[in-house]
Length: 319
Ligand code: ADP
Ligand code: TRP
Image 1 (cartoon, protein in one colour):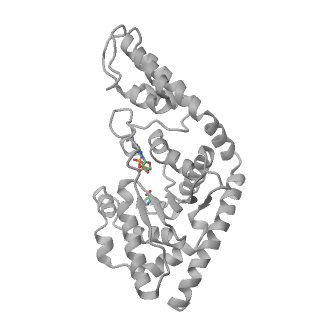
Image 2 (spheres, rainbow, N blue to C red):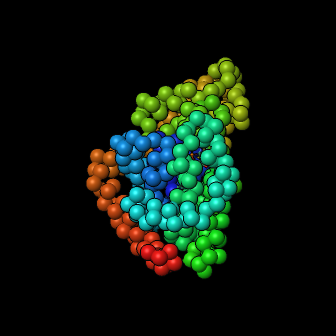
Image 3 (cartoon, helix red, strand yellow):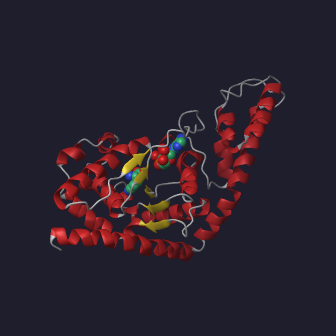
């Protein structure tokens, strides 16, 4: 299957992103033809600070590479290195009814949150449709908030195909229902907008601070503790196999250890799990040319596919 996903270069990745999305992406590389890119054009809708965008794109690329995106298995590039995307975006705009975009929840939500109602933000789904359709994508793995965008891409593809024949593959959104929501330090869904995250690439000091802020109850140290409703346990579980989970449950039930001990254990689990990725992340960031080379190699492969699609369209639109 041809699977495509765009990754926003916005902020630091947290363990909710990892267990909710990245881990599955890494695993999917073995069975699918994966196309993955850093969506820096999309990020411009929320910030136009060039230096920040450049840095964030570099950091995002380093993060995904160090966590296991393999540029030899997957096509991995920086969105803006394949300019055909914006060209297709404009052509697709001619096939996009205003009403289709006016119904987009994501746009309405962002306006409600105070973002400027710019044309860029409004037409964001058309750019996303271009990303998807340019590469003959079959499957787009998404969080629930992005399903409508994939449906918009499909609607646009149908309109074009009706007019010009079978140009585009019809994409399908795939939501991974099996993935459990990872809780944040306050027990709500972990999300950068709630400031309750535990970040994958945090320094030791920040990691410690984030873990110590996990909300627990006030059961006394010597008392048995309720692991089922404990946020520390819920997070630690992600890193443990069945027998390790059982061992931790026993420690809770036995009493004699406080939440501080469990938090220390969680700290160790997280540090160990991401230790190699963290080292690789730091190494890549101090060798930005290496990141550029990898992205350029990906862009070259992506461009080949993009040009094939554009060739079919140039004729039709008179270019
Ligand atoms: P955030 O809520 O921090 O802004 P994003 O919306 O950027 O995160 O999510 C990026 C990806 O990570 C999506 O696929 C989303 O489903 C997944 N994800 C984010 N937070 C969680 C979470 N707490 N549990 C599981 N998956 C998550
Ligand atoms: N809009 C997506 C998000 O906010 C990112 C994205 C851009 C994307 N283009 C895409 C996702 C194409 C899937 C396919 O997460």
